[in-house]
Image (spheres, one colour):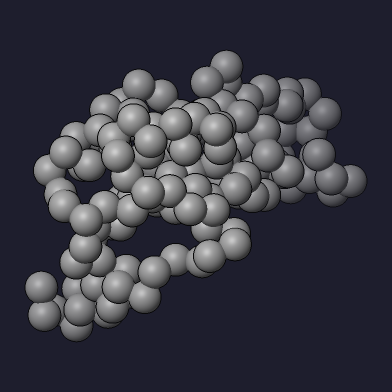
Length: 123
C-alpha cells in the first residue's frame, strides 16, 4: 500500500489489504492465476486435434507464470499456464511434440503471419 493510497480509497485507515486467493501465485507486484486441470485438458485436446505442433516454453515473468505456447503447422496457436518448465517439456515429450525454450529461440514467424492474416480478415 502506497503512502497516499489510504486517502484515495475514501475508506481511511479501516481499509483491509486483500490477500491473494489460494489458487493464485504472486509474481512481482501482481497476482496471477495458477495453472489447473482445465489448462492441461485444453492443451491435450489442442495437440490431438492439430498436426505439426511445436511447443515453446515461456519462462515466468513479472506478470505471468510459466506458460506453454503450442503452435501448429499453419501458425494457429494457443497458450496456457503450466506448473513448471519441467512439466511443460514432459508434456511435449509425452505427446511427441518438439519443445523449445522460447527465451532462447523466440516464437516462430508462422505464428506472427497467422496473427496478421486473422487481423486482416483473411482467415
